[in-house]
Amino acid sequence: MLKEALEGQVTAVCNAITASVQFQVEPVGRWFEAFLKRRTRTVSASFRELEEEKELSEESEDEDLQLEEYPMLQTLDPKDWKNQDHYAVFGLGHLRYKATQKQIKAAHKAMVLKHHPDKRKAAGEKIVEGDNDYFTCITKAYEILSDPVKRRAFDSVDPTFDNAVPSKSEGKENFFKVYAPVFERNARWTNKKHVPNLGDMSSSFEEVDAFYSFWYNFDSWREFSYLDEEEKEKAECRDERRWIEKQNRGARAQRKKEEMNRIRTLVDTAYSFDPRIKKFKDDEKARKEAEKKAKVDAKRKEQEEKERARQAELEAARLAKEKEEEEAKQVAMQAKKEKEIQKKASKKERQKLRTTCKNWNYFADNESESVKMMEEVEKLCDRLELLSMQSLNEVLASSTKEESKIAVEKMIQEVNAQLLKEKEETEARARQSSKSSEQSSSSAGGGSKTWNEDDLQLLIKAVNLFPAGTNARWEVIANYMNLHSTSGIRRNAKDVINKAKNLQKLDPTQKDEINKKAFEKFKKEHSVVPPTVDNAVPSERFEGSSADGTASPWTTEEQKLLEQALKTYPVSTPERWEKIAGVVPGRSKKDCMKRYKELVEMVKAKKAAQEQVSTKSKK
Image (cartoon, rainbow, N blue to C red; front, side, top):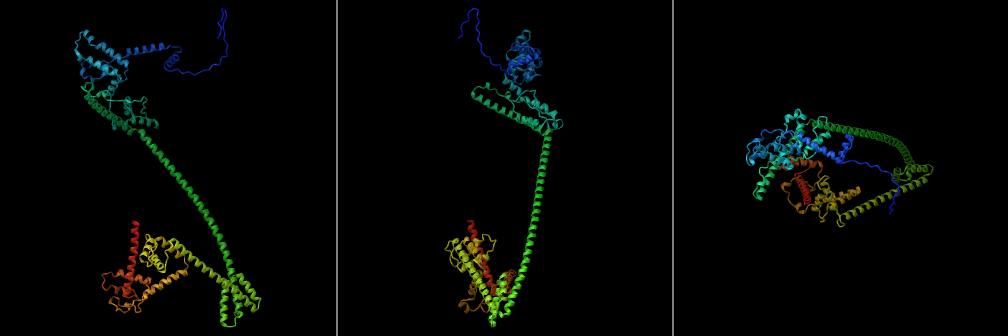
């Protein structure tokens, strides 16, 4: 704490001062107005002076306010105040909704000073007693216009407002001249401050889009409570007041809906006749067509590039293929030449071997041994390679007869041993293949489902009876075998497929053996006739049967002739079977009828198998 300075002395405090900092300050509110005044006047002005200037400007406005005399004022009916023009009563018909509250107050003041009953009575004018005097209309007008809510209700039904929408014929010629004032007139109902203008032909797409977006989403404050037919204040009870409110709400909603339909009709009509919209649509269409054309051109170029690349690849592949083919051709020609040379050399060596052996009389003393040795020499010619044959001929050329015989016999033994070994290997492979096929079929078919000769023959018959392309072929074959098999073993499609594949893998000799057994069984069944049949007297129906009692298999040509005869001679033909037998050469009436029965049974069995498979598939 500092001590008090004595008389005649001064207390000083010293301290370091920080640097000054400059701040940017912006005035707002009334300070901003003072700032503007100072800038325009180049002198300082106090806020008091600004307030005084504002009051003086308002007073000057009141002094400049010109009221229009309403000639029909004194003839107004106070009871019909709701249908009067309140702005015209105050002489503000030229301002209407643009009139300020101060102007309304000033007009009311002027009307009171001029038309108050006391003023008129003092002037010697006769006054109507009660509320029947026209001054009541002035009072009602001020009551409506001084209240913002009531004034808005009256402005919503302004009798001077033009609600008309231009017709289609009017908007076609001078669109901007006709529709600009209509939109400007209806813009007074919006709740938004900034209203976009209609613009002209030079307006951009964004401006036009903003304009129509504003009007299609028009937010109107216009309401129709002023036109309520009933006043709820006059209701005698709460229920009546509620009923009046309900009626008024319904009427307001209906008028509001009609108003929004009017605005929407105005906007739709303007949009349909706006030349800028048509221009924008044409431009957009042209742009899309240009983009589409550019896309098509780009795609076409891309396809052309791909086609050129593909052609280049094909050309390169063709050249490479031709080169490979040429090289392969050269190699083949070279190999062919070598093969021809080797073939000629082999032929020469074989001829040399035959000639040598023939000169030595095939190393035999009698003809039978000579023939046997000749066969062995031919076997050597077929089996020996060129080098072996050349070495053998060299040995024979430089040896005696006995030595040559020994050499030939040795070579024959080696060839025979090789042939025997190849035969054993072939038989072993066949046995192994048969064994593996049996194992796979037994494992696939459950192991216990063995196949006997009858089942194999029935499978071969069913495979031929139901060729490839038959619907559910292997199921049909399995059902056919289950119906006609004598073994009693039930087989499914999987068993049949596995066994058919195994039969395809068998050697041709085994297939021939199976077919041979099947034919022998068929021949045996058809050649053995029961004694009762042998001793029976042949009936007239089977006259002309073969004498030996056996029937030869039907050939393909005989089958075709039989089928054609069956078509030519229907059932109604008299002596049908005699005529059919006459068409098929070498076949009797009995043979034709028996073959026909076999075909019928075969077709029935085929259909039964197929129907059974289709029934199972449906289930």
